[in-house]
Image (tube, rainbow, N blue to C red; front, side, top):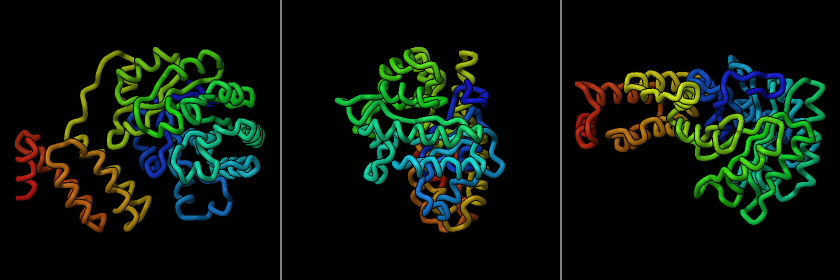
Length: 341
């Protein structure tokens, strides 16, 4: 799997997710087998570049290369300027967001809203690729199958992207109107891959090693990109990579390994965000890790009331110690009784 001049260690990639794929999360996913990760989308508006949120999103200190930054916007010149700005900040691959379906992005004609304006797509692609070419920075595109099911235009957009010099295309098997509902379809990804020479990355509802194998076989895609299935489950990347290479299924992590990974994640998260933001933003990650485990619901309800990182970290550590002692795990009622004791 290659993107421009970059050769990736495997074809199991981390999708950009706002509020999720920050530097601590990307680093952990790469440590656990992801071959590549794209940052949260960064605004193309220069007025926002000095904000605390954008500054964090552009922090790649110590991150495994190649560093990829996703940019979002609707003005070709501004997108080109944002690409150069991020390249000068350390980005070695620029990804263009034409897939985000949320209202606040689409309402300013960005993200998947661009799929209704193919002439504007062409200008953005040309502007960003032209700006990045002298810097030796390849450009990728992440998009959806169309604005809605009656106006799927992924194949036209994909051919436009290839002709503009885009180095790889990620395609989510839903339209903007679908948001994240229903099931992703892979027929469009298959049709697009059949017509392109650049790498095509399949995205959408890939949540297991077996599903990854089926999607790759059916679509002919060069790689899979994992998003929501990695929330609270960063080891999914090593599971998929191992299965694709060997056909064998890895055992899930033990409670002890889960504890170590989550506490390591929290340590890095707190250092990255600081005390107040760190304790607040860690809650969702803790909830994702513990989702479905015995007694997790009642524990998370109490844990969400903790307002400092030290006590939050200790509560998680103690929870794993209790839930797994004496040969656990225990059924939910027993676990809750132990935790309340």
